[in-house]
Amino acid sequence: MRKTSLMLALLASVAATPAFAATEATPQTVLTTYGDIAEAAYSEAHATALDLSKAIDALLANPTDETLAAARDAWRAARRPYQQTEVYRFGNALVDDWEGKVNAWPLDEGLIDYVDASYGTDSPENAFYTANVIANAKLTVNGQEIDATEITAELLAETLQEAGEIEANVATGYHAIEFLLWGQDLNGTEKGAGNRPASDFDTANCTGGNCDRRAAYLKAATALLLADLDEMKTAWSADGAARKELAEKGEAGGLATILTGMGSLSYGELAGERMKLGLMLHDPEEEHDCFSDNTHMSHLDDVIGIRNVWFGTYKGFAGAAVEGASLRDLVAAKNPELAAEMTAKLDASLAAFEALRTRAETVEAYDQMIGEGNAEGNALVEAAVQSLIDQTRSIERVVSELGLEQIAFEGSDSLDNPNAVFH
Image (tube, rainbow, N blue to C red):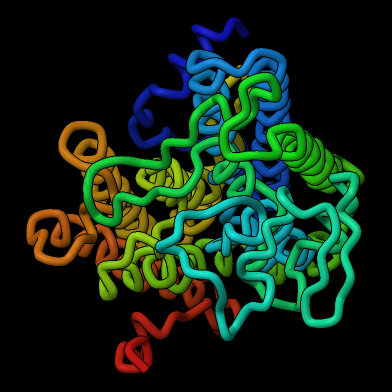
C-alpha cells in the first residue's frame, strides 16, 4: 500500500460495532479466530516496524528536520498494530515472557544517553541511572565491567536490558527508540513533547556528542525490535509455538485465556498502572508514551484490541483483515442479554477513549490532562478509567456464564489499595 493510503488507514476512526460472523461459534472456532487475529496483528506490527526501520535509515543517512519528522511519524504508525496485540499478553505465558523486550516502561533514560541536569546524577535504587552507554564505550557499574565499544543488538538485549535486574533499565523496544527519536520531555504537565534535534544524529555537525554511537544505538535497537516482532509473528502462525500452547489448554482453558487477557488489560494494567496511578500522582513520568505525547493513541488501541477479540474481527492498517466466529457469538447463544451488556460496555469504553483522543488532538496532550488542578482533563481520564472498571465487571459475568473457573485478573494498588501508592 502506498504511504499516503497507509496513513489514511492509520487515522481512520473505528468502524461501527461489527455484525455477527457467519461462521458458527463454537469454542474451537472462537479460538481459531483468536489465533488468526494475533497472527494478523503481529504481522502488521512487524511490517510497520520495517517501515520504521527504513525511515530511521533515511534519518541517519541525512539527518534533517524532515527526516526526523518522518521517522517519528513511522514510530507512531508502528505503535498502532502493536498496541492492539496487548490483549494477548495476559493469559498467554509465551507472550508475557516476551513482552518486556519490546514494550517495557517506564525507563530510566540516563542508562542510554545524555539527560538534562534536572534528571539528577544518581538513584539509590539504580546504579545504572546515568550510565550513559552512548557516551561511554567502557564503564564499570557496581563492579560490573561493560565493554560497549561496539553498540550491537546483543549488547542491548543481553547486557543492558534490565541491567542489575532492575526493570527500569529498559534498553530495547519501542520506548528506547521513542526516547532516541524525541529525547526527554522536559515540559512536565505543560505543553510540549520531547524535542531532540536532528543534529544529534549528524556526525558532521554533531550536537549532544557521540552522534555516531547514538546512530549505532538507534540502528541496533530497531534491528532488535524487528527480530523480536518476527519471533512473535512466527509464534502465532498456523504451527507456531503460541498456537500450540493455546491448543494444549483445551477449549475451556483457551476461552479462559481470552478472558484473562480482556480482564487483566482492562483492569490492572490499563485502568490501574497506566492511567489511575498517573492520575493520582499527577505525574507525567507515569504516562505510557511519555517522550512523544502519543499516550492517548496507545491507550485507545489497547481498548480496540480488547474489542477485537470480543467481536472476532481485526481491521488491519495495510490490508490485513480478520473476521470469524467470536466470543460475543458464543455468549449470545447462551445469554443474549449478557452479550448485549458486554457489547454496550465495550462501546462505552471506546467512546470514552475516543473522547481522550479528541481532546489530545484539539486541546491538550495526555500528560497535561493528568496534571494537578486540571479538573476537566482529570475528569475525562477518570471517566475512561471507570469505563474500564465497569466493563471488567461484565467480563467477570461472561466468565461465569461460560462455566469457567474463576479468573484472577491483574490488579493494581491504584485501584485495590490506593493508600499504598503514597507510601
